[in-house]
Length: 170
Image (cartoon, rainbow, N blue to C red):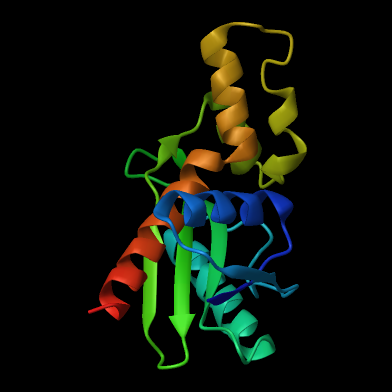
């Protein structure tokens, strides 16, 4: 199986490979450098999903012999209480135009991150600084979750793979 992935992010590719191994799927993962054609920091669910779809579509175009392609996007959105939440969306597209997209759970970000996003600054530049002199277990864990985004990316990737692979094996 060949999977074209619309990213060269070692982090995202590593998480994808972990999930493939967890599920028991042997696949060649082919990273593709593309542009998501959205803002650098998507701040709505729609924009985040569109980014993952754009990544998957472009990857499939660039790797014509792939069985399917995947796009992975991390984004933020304001909930009904005007609080930014972090999440991920993963989309899969195949040659028969089957499309499967899944969102991860969402995490309401701490006030530190809220201020950055509300001031329209790029969050990635500041995540390492969140309570960097605080060595409490919960703070350390929160800092790493937001910085590495692993729970969000792995959940969205796992769910989209399961949804796609289960429906295509029927």
